[in-house]
Length: 143
Image 1 (tube, rainbow, N blue to C red):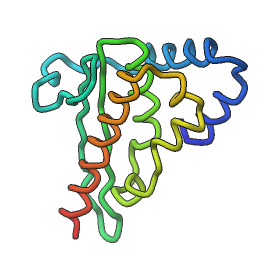
Image 2: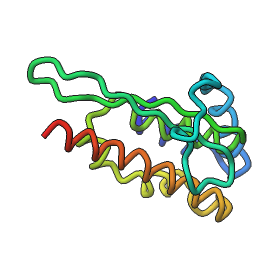
Image 3: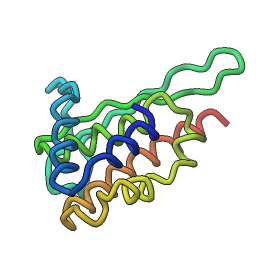
C-alpha cells in the first residue's frame, strides 16, 4: 500500500476505535515471520512487545540505486499492525527515500501518535529508528 492509500483509508474512518480495528486488521494480514528469523539480532530494542525487523538490500543494477526491503513481526496485534503500516511505507524504497520520509509526522497525520500509549509510542519510535539506521548504513555502503 502507498502512503496515499494508507492516508485515504484512515481518512474515511470516523473515530479512533475504527482506526484501531483497522490497524489490528492490517496486523492480521502481515505475513508471519519464520521463527528462525526471530533472533536477538533482529529484535527491536525499546519495544514493550516483542518486535523483530529484518532489512535486506536489493543489489543495484547499472544506474539503479540499492533498494531496501523489510520483514517484520510482533507478538502483539496492535503493534503488528503498526509494523505492517511501517513496512508498507518503507518497503522497496531507496535508502535516500526512506531517510527523506518523515515517519513520525506520517503516523501523526494518521491520528495514531496521540492515540497510542506511551509504551507503544516509544516502541514505534524504536522501530522507526531501526529502519532509519538500516537505511543510513545502506546509503553509506553505496557511497
